[in-house]
Length: 51
Image 1 (cartoon, helix red, strand yellow):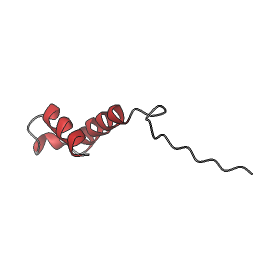
Image 2: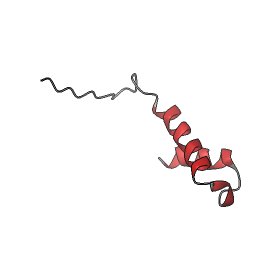
Image 3: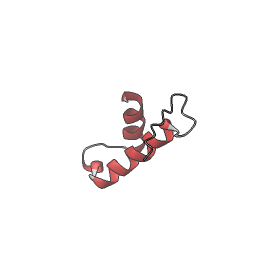
Image 4: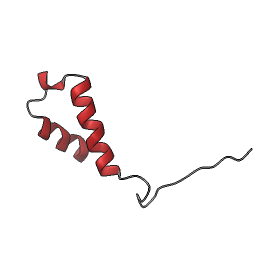
């Protein structure tokens, strides 16, 4: 049996920025954050910035 570990130090396998944006959009929708965060775009921008 072989075990493999991949490290994506230069972000060639996964685009971290786009992944964070998609994650923030999903969280905004999933948790109905429009009740608490006034603007979806602002929420996503702040989420990515604070990461």
